Image (tube, rainbow, N blue to C red; front, side):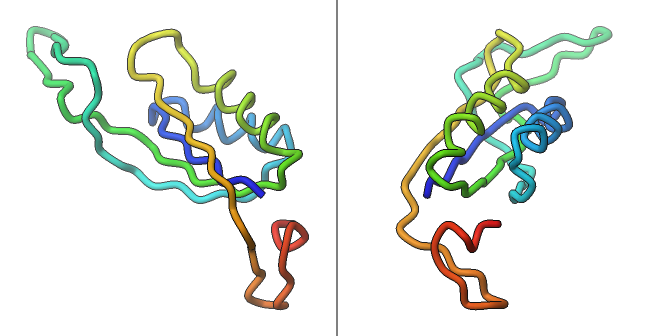
Length: 112
């Protein structure tokens, strides 16, 4: 099993969620987060300067069976990307075991 953590633009969340549903990822958790990125310059909108030092993003946490890892990552990249600085990051780590609390199931079947 793999844990896929993605930090994406909040504005792309609906597209990412829909893309994940299309590849069969129907359960994941997410949080609104603030981070600091590489972009050092601010933006001007209607004559007002906005700092981009603190960036609002959405953090997704997804656990999938190994065979779903690549389609999940591809869905996130394809739907979250704009080609601009600040599109986000994806981190992948291994999960040793998973349990369904209700039934006590363990392993990959507990993810269904």
